[in-house]
Image (cartoon, rainbow, N blue to C red; front, side, top):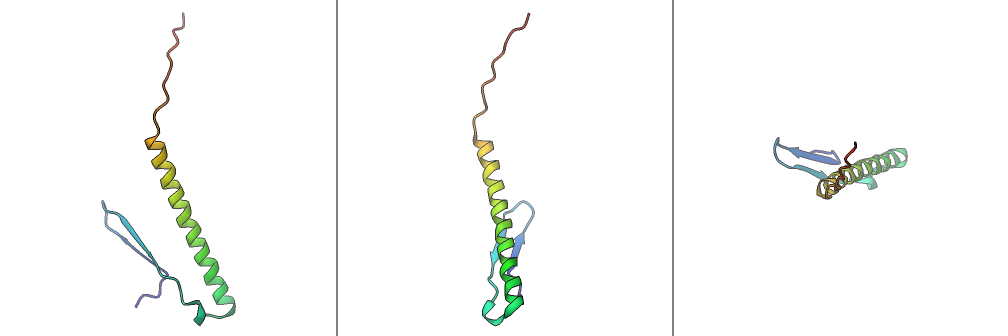
Length: 74
């Protein structure tokens, strides 16, 4: 059994699948539990950042190009 909180599956040219498994914090005590909570929060924030970047790129690709005005200079 894999004790990792994350399982990532990737095949070139296909989607990336990320599975999140929360650690059993009830079995952890004190400082260990606090570190795991902090690590979980950091990984979720990293995932949020990845999603924000993907959203920004999608919006930029879908945005219509600005019309350019040509000005004749003599």
